[in-house]
Length: 205
Image 1: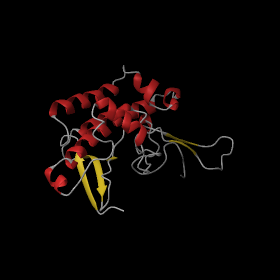
Image 2: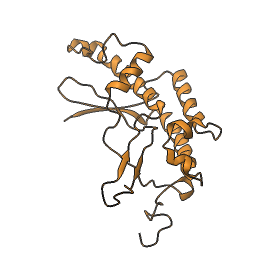
Image 3: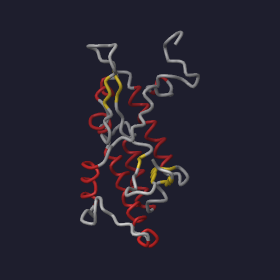
Image 4: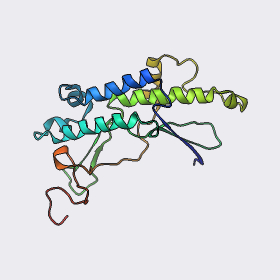
């Protein structure tokens, strides 16, 4: 396991202009006129929700994440390492959303999970930023003095598109810390429980 960690914010890895462009992309997805969010990036259940609460809640999350990622004290990247050969990158606050559903054929069996990891391309863009930051770390004089050499993706992978292709094919898109299947939000935002942890619309639960 690891015994050393770093947590780095997006403003500390990006130039102001690049950060502004990224945050504009996030906020653009949150606008009601942007149908790409529902038709491409989110699970089909969002489109079937006639109340619109799930989509309303997700748009609120996008705006909250945009504010979060603009904060130089809020981490985007977690990298945990020990004596060894890897410098991993964990994406702490992804934009992709999956589903947890009952197995309608066998309701008492395990639920059906669809992680949909990296279904929103903004997550790949974050991984791209993280990888480039860690590359600079490995390329620093201190690390080179200790004999650090990049092996993956390797010096032959340089352009943004090459790195994106590597990330989609070679990374584990989940850090195995699933959460938020019962979101604490208002019911009209698609929330399941309130701040009192009581399930919306259910008595005695």
